[in-house]
Length: 389
Image (cartoon, rainbow, N blue to C red; front, side, top):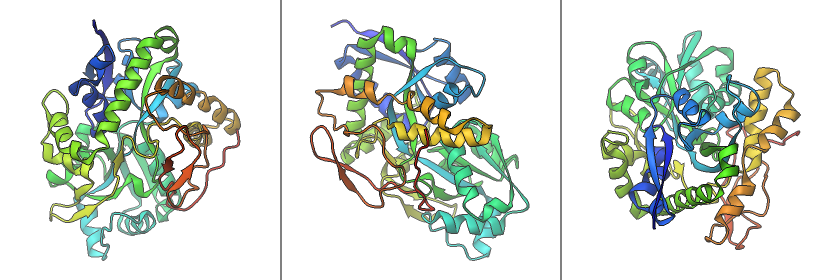
């Protein structure tokens, strides 16, 4: 069967794994396509590659297509998030000086209690705290702002600066930032570079944060439904393959190659296995399900996830919240997900929205095959998000 080359942009991060695995394991060829994976140097360039038609699809920060739908960021090309590529996968880290102050005041870096970490960091930091993040419209920013607002850090002047992920350790070493929120392996890279320590996984702030999405232009999705379906099926199969614990060592080796992330497999293994070295002293912490690619309908684009993102963006940018939520709901395409993955055995929920933050324990829900169990979905402050739009 002749394959159709499909240009797809990605950032060199662990959570690009579904795309890389789809190519390396041949899931793309099985669907009649050949993924032409193109790395981007920054999130702004990746967004532009997709918006201006240089690629047909992209590994994209989940808030980007929502922000574009709300008229934020200067580019208004309509995009669809046809599936979530990964849940969670970020880390918050601090520079060496802040890490020493935290240790001196007796903080134990438990790597799980976001409220305690915020209180300790507020005590250790100066009046101004500068965080590095990869992009202004990102889950990194949304998690940081949500965490800051709900802890003692709210009393500080917090500045957020954009730094490309591979340069985060360098910015920390140069004193340009005091701390960061970034996707792996770049947080662990800062630890191994002896310039910082890890304080929290993003999962400690929201257990089910949609981190990256598979995004396409609406126009392309409408005009190339067969290619869209082939792409979605190949990526979904890659996520299912990644959910097998026995696959992850192989995946680490794939991602580590010079063509992709160009770092050691051991560094990638930490995120995939949830086994972290959080400081230069070699302290170890374990995070079950640090990044999720499949289980618990992880890839389903819940419209309520889009609404939560829109709610936060609208409040900060003076946009009517109800209108923003309705616009955002149209970006996360649960309808296309159901249509293109029907018949594959994909366990899809009966509903397209849920109350984000309302599941303290794993819960069975109505689904296509009747066996879907959603994982705990809570915010660190135990608030429940109820959309208004």
